[in-house]
Length: 549
Image (cartoon, rainbow, N blue to C red; front, side):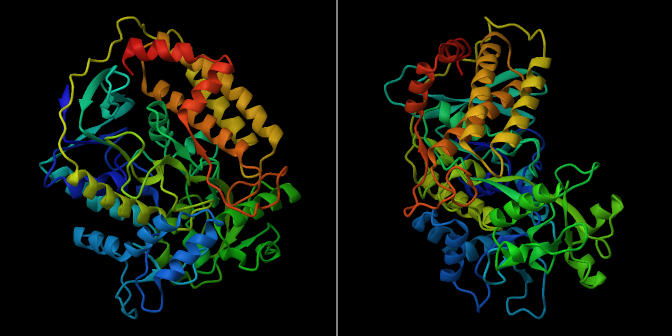
């Protein structure tokens, strides 16, 4: 048994910034599936939205967030995040992050404007903000004596009082699989934080890293926590379309700095879809591209910023310029081939303003959390801001929490399971899931498509539950189990929304309802329905008892 004061699952901006805020007073463990630097945060290009310029206002940022969120943003959450924007940026600067300077700016830093924003308020480090921030914080995390990192480890499940048969249900830690040694470790902590990132790998095409498999959402759901707004999956409009490029994002800032979307013949099309044209929110731009591609039978469209001076492009987008040049695309002269791709999950584990979930001792921050900030569609560059603000909120709550004794926890029991006989089952199910989710639960949805997806998900769940109950766990099995459950939650949430709002567009319900309501799923309802449907809940229970998951 490995004991810490705080157990953080995930090493992105949310997890690392929380660890640094706690480490002077708490012993912290960070569990991460790959290296400490590997996360979606490190892939973020555009920047962090915050009210820094004297011509901008808190109310304007809030209103832009509300507008993008299609009336579904939680007012208290939105105000909390926006009002703490400057403080979050100042904290990063104090940690040593060197944002791009601008001597002509009153604040000394360059601010860019992205889709959906009414002002220039996105502070950045060229076009690789996430990587710069992650590198700075990772160095500090590695050197802090009170933070211990466990790289190449993946959490299997949370340990709760109810699973141990205790009267008081609370999160007590997690069972964690050591990928290098194929052994399961028991981590015990009075406070556990889910910072595991998003769900992008549930789709065939995504801008997310391979680690984005919905782990936090799935673990929280199995532990009895509610999830919210899972139907709102943001498809980034501009992912590089090239056979040799994988998940390479073309930043929102390219359109913010004058990039134009064109068909192959050079015709602009965004003015026909929205008066804001290329600066419309992402859901509108993604649907417009999807419409034009299907209308004209295209594999991609083109994002053109070649009308800007070459020096301007190389200065503002050095990484995008270099990567495209490697692939034979000179963006100072040529348009960039782009397609939409799954990018961000606006929903997640339901939390309050302190990042607390329904389960005592369990917090959720970052993309895995459903804070209510993003509503039905995330405003560009609000995600990293959310990570910082809710990491601070969670830190304050954790530091103020009274100490509590923890019971003994039995080790992971795999005495009744064997090594898998055929790993091909996992690979096949993974591929099938991502393909039908892309086809049936993508940018445009219908009742029939959702029904087909749910039918296939239930078949996969039965196979995976049986596999999980009889064979030793592996990294691929853990991720696949979480992905299928996450897909189930996305589809069920989409089925409950009888309208088109933000990122959820249904041909069967094209209208917008008068009142905006969040979609909240409760695990007890889910389990009851599963039993009625005759799925493998009994196998799940047997697996949990046998393996202490």
